[in-house]
Length: 132
Image 1 (cartoon, one colour):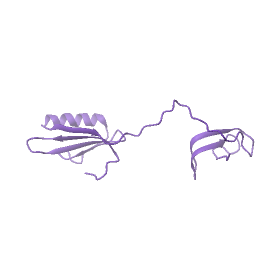
Image 2 (cartoon, helix red, strand yellow):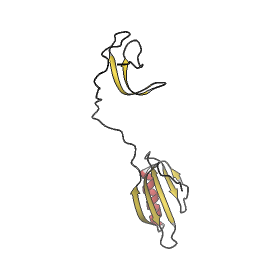
Image 3 (tube, one colour):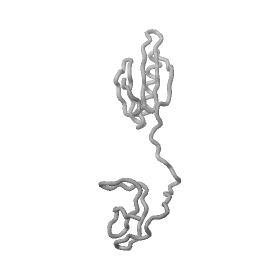
Image 4 (spheres, helix red, strand yellow):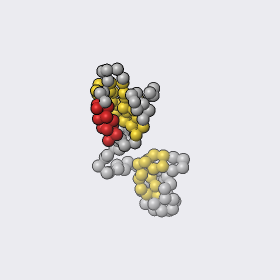
């Protein structure tokens, strides 16, 4: 059992009344990885996501386990959907100061040394930051 749960999206806790055996099934935030802690499959890993969880829950129910509790731990990574439109901030350059080509705004540009919003030259230095 891990001491942190940053990687866990959802947990199911099961027990069996006859011997108080406990099982924990964790679905990770990537939506694919599943890990079993306790019971006959202790340490079992699976990469089939929710389908694996459903199969494990059925398997353990047939073996006499009952679901005690299930709960969300962390939210899965969600992309921010802004209707496909990027807002261009005011105050950027209208043209490249070296070649006078047009510039484009990229809200999340990544280069060797910098990452973040950038005005990029479409001519002489494509992909390079242009200062306002």
